[in-house]
Image (cartoon, rainbow, N blue to C red):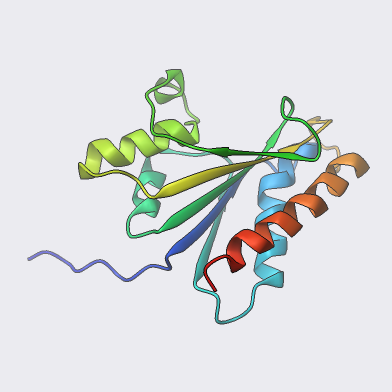
Length: 156
């Protein structure tokens, strides 16, 4: 007997990072704040974790759009957007997948294209263990939240 999968929200916002490593917390903080701002009727699931894992490919099943949110040392301030494509990369053999590799895992498992995925990379400055998020990173997070709120409202 095969279980019928539970219905999922058409939108997924997935942030990752370590809350104990300064600006690395930007992904989870973005998720926390979007949850607080979201209208109750908005059909969105929010997930956060320390890093992307191969099992997260199943979180893409049944979605129309996915927004990945992560901190970045290399993107311009305050944030950068990238429309993602599935791809095999070296992160496949590490403990932390890239969003592109996760999308490739989805394709390999399901034999179908993954949903439309966008990366919201928020500029961070300091990733030191035990440090709080920097004032600059929190300002970048505020700008990213404004953009993400519009992204969530695009289909409403």
